[in-house]
Length: 168
Image 1 (spheres, helix red, strand yellow):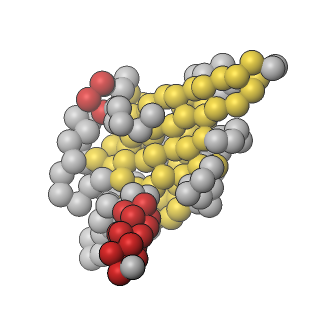
Image 2: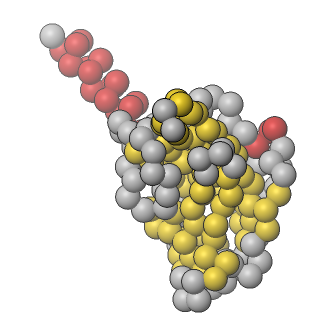
């Protein structure tokens, strides 16, 4: 019986840690606040956001998954707020998918966006990925104080090496 209990605890622990962030929030450096939201209304859908300090999507120390948001089993649609380094370019990969019916037809859309911006010290930002019914997608990053796109925001063609092919 103890063996079964140990196996059950191990499985639950693995399932729960799969959704945990591995990004290290700055503690002593200057920082900004970034709120990540899931805007896709279809069920099921999800968005995974990963942070990098380079456009090559290489996981340097302290960078990694910021959040997994969505609608479905084991996924929360609640916004996640994290601290990010200020005055340095932050590269974000948004990888999202949505499933549902559009005019009676079953649809599956997946998309990946690579974007960057330079958060300003003590500023607050909101970021989310929009996936349209047609399947196109874009990322929005807004400064909460002005409700306008972050000044340094850039969007890039997403190279294949930035796509986590194990997500779908």
